[in-house]
Image (cartoon, rainbow, N blue to C red; front, side, top):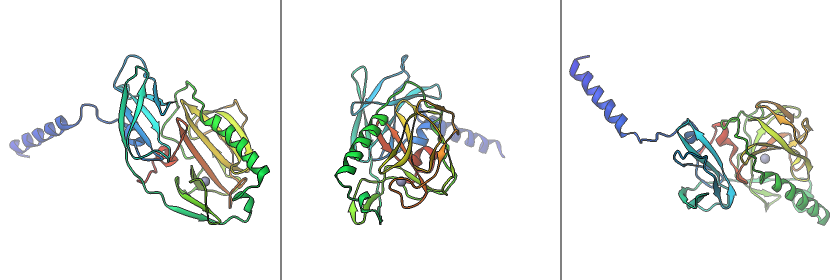
Amino acid sequence: MPKSNRSHLFTGLLALLLSLPVHAEGFITRLLNKPVPGGVAVIDLGNPQQPPKVRYQGKPVLTVHEDGQRWIAIVGLALSVKPGRQQIELDDGRTLPFEVGTRHYAEQRITLKNQQQVTPNADNLKRIERELAEQTRAYQRFSARQPSNLLFEKPVNGPLSSPFGLRRFFNGEERNPHSGLDFAANRGTPIKAPAAGEVILVGDYFFNGKTVFLDHGQGLISMFCHLSEIDVKPGQQIPRGGHIGKVGATGRATGPHLHWNVSLNDARVDPSIFIGAFKP
Ligand SMILES: [Zn+2]
């Protein structure tokens, strides 16, 4: 290459480098920042001496020291969050704004033979209410531990079936949107922990069937539903990739599959974000 071309190349590269923002986005930010209803907002907190304490809608938020460079807040956005300007609150009283975009969620129509699973009777409604309160308490836990990993392993080997956020109609009646991600897998397929965690709740619920809650730390919580078999107990520490139970069809399920919820600051978010499978 002639000398003058080399120097042009060098000048070009230098210009490119100088035009990059001072804080180039780190890996976690690029992976997780999907600020839409049902998504995740990653917010730069700078590099204060003390780990910052952050809240969103009054609830404590996961913070991570990214690349040893700066603190970031990783905020779960419920499906009910309104697009537009939102804000997080810092413990020193400051607020930081961020923008939430829009995302389209499709509809799904499901036929169930058991009408009780569409319009439950009074006894079942009481049971559902009790179970909902128990599960809500689990989602509201905020433990001090740092998640072992934010890029999750898939909990089962199997294709994705039903996506997160579908508006669902059971026998023609609209019910809650799909709060997790479904994997098609045969009955008995082993389920693995996508990150290390403590088992904080197990149950056999009216809608969710046999269920395990895993606390990965700082409000990042996974729920696994419709299991045929639960192989862990509350209080047990599960390593990343550790065995939890087996795929089944217990509760309101039309066939064997794994339903996996991911919750951040008590907001159910799209698990596909954490396995690098998010589609806008
Ligand atoms: Zn599901």
